[in-house]
Image (cartoon, rainbow, N blue to C red; front, side, top):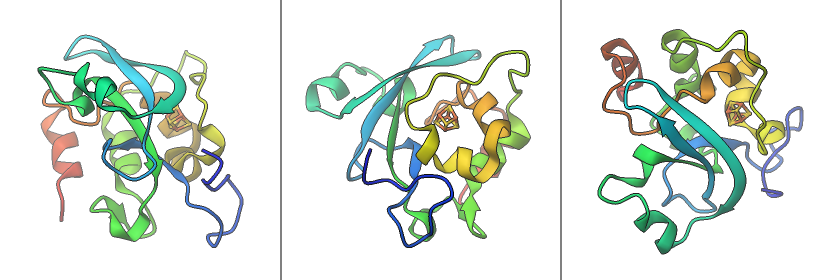
Length: 149
Ligand code: SF4
């Protein structure tokens, strides 16, 4: 992830890392595996690794974004979730996902360059492990907050 921008660097530097990207985005890497249940998912963060056809096939019969989390360079204004200079997914996640206050922040390889950490800090990070990119079981309010304008 060395091409990504680290927190505090200027916008002209490399982009930050989206922590909930689709695997088809350029530069995508696996960063997490969704464990737990449909209604109580919990992401196990892993050492980033390349997206390969074999990895994506492991998700079958569901889609990769239902069982894996991927990172890729944040597209900022070119992403449908971009809201007034920030990631709308981070904002919605802080508003609609219960945090894990008592738990330490997860061990995560991309924190220094993470878009959610950059935009919402620990408020997003404490909720991140409960986020499934393509989650049919998320609350109606959370789903509405993520709906494109
Ligand atoms: S929000 Fe926190 S745990 Fe999630 S990807 Fe970013 S730094 Fe890692």
